[in-house]
Picture 1 (cartoon, helix red, strand yellow):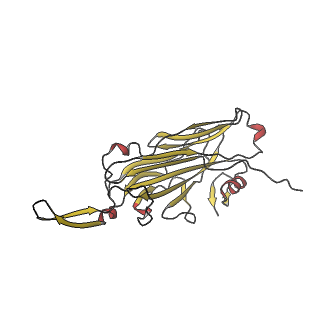
Picture 2 (spheres, rainbow, N blue to C red):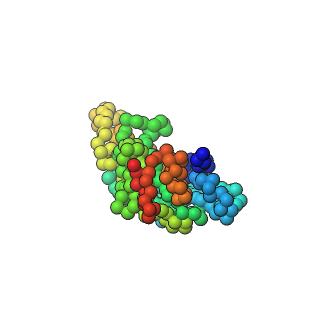
Picture 3 (cartoon, rainbow, N blue to C red):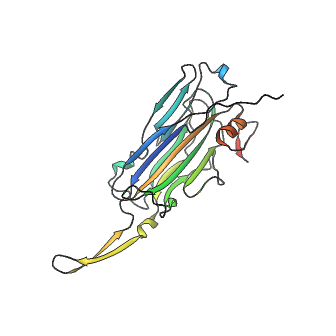
Length: 252
């Protein structure tokens, strides 16, 4: 009877939630983390090993979560996306802001990684507004350096990316984004209001419909060990992949 291969608990490694206030300032959301993945085939040899990943933004580690098998401890740090952007008093539509995101393997075993980015808008009251397209939040994805977009799983709101190579322990992936921009089309939503001033003169005001809105970007980073990678990825992420003899991952 063939022994069934088991995989330990699964979940996102890092989940960052950040937002910036369109045109008039910025705020930031919370940072959360969950579990990495490894198979029980590894447990006998992992007494001094650890698995973990970190999300880096413009060369700085923003958030991380690392598991030490020997100590059975999670070492977690939390940070904020768009912190540099928050120094601006306005977020200008059409302006490209530097947003270089990459993944660092901060564990001691080689891993495969994927990233899920989710974009959304909230109004002045904090309510999610689904009438404003997340596609207006433009992240420039880089796909000529080992990263690929899973088009089947991606939507205008969510983008799923896989790094096709093995990420060695202590090493980083290339950037998967390099800029962030709010589409100029958002400035076309203008409402004209008319009224009278204190002297009875007619006054015409042009009000941008989405002034004061917040855009949100959630970044979720997943890691899976390279040992029995196809089965581990299927168990952890529910995705069928092929791994070549030289370790290159491709989607089925």
